[in-house]
Length: 283
Image 1 (tube, one colour):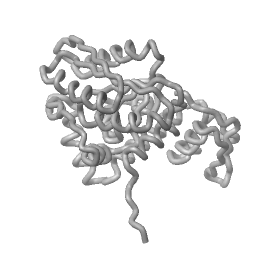
Image 2 (cartoon, one colour):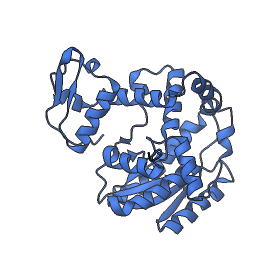
Image 3 (spheres, rainbow, N blue to C red):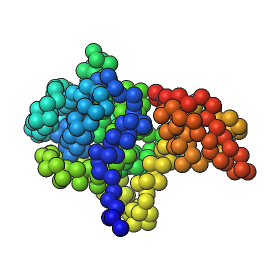
Image 4 (cartoon, one colour):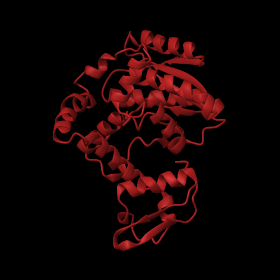
């Protein structure tokens, strides 16, 4: 009997782009890169898939002006982009140190990326993966967020796509090793003064011991909460309440809508709900 192997990062990203981020044919995609492992892996895969999926790829890095090493890290991203034949640019900011630093840097980074993306109406691709998403759900829980606040890091949200979001950190590391990709390590990822770092290095290992599938469970929760807000669910014949559907059924309905397919799901009591007007979701 042939040995079964888990899907590669390339396979996972292709599926996510086609089923959850599109349509991409003819679109411009701007890969947000830093030189770190996640974004190097993303850039590598996006460059490989661009010819078959029909999007125009470029890459852009943002130096927040907070660390002297950041320029050298972006040099790694530039070197990979040039090797792959992907146009590359960079922006240097001056984010002041102080409270809420990560949030302010993130806001400034997205503003810079959107300015670059605007002339081509490009989608911005970020390198968030499933482990990042699970951590974000935990962070929101720790801060007292309700259901809306836990619906985080969708595969596509307006002008942002997240090609790696159905892949785990292990998938990313395997891709980096398999393709011998050079990448930088950001020392701030070890700084326990940031709550996210403590969640990553303290909370998540404990939760993984208690529930080895915790990353999958937290991602499924985010999916269900995102799905419950989408109007496509209102197009299901016979839907009395979003509570009729479990998270797997919500995922299948959304997937069918993106692909323009009809679907029927069976809920409690033996009722079949049918999607009335399959259509593409552009959220």
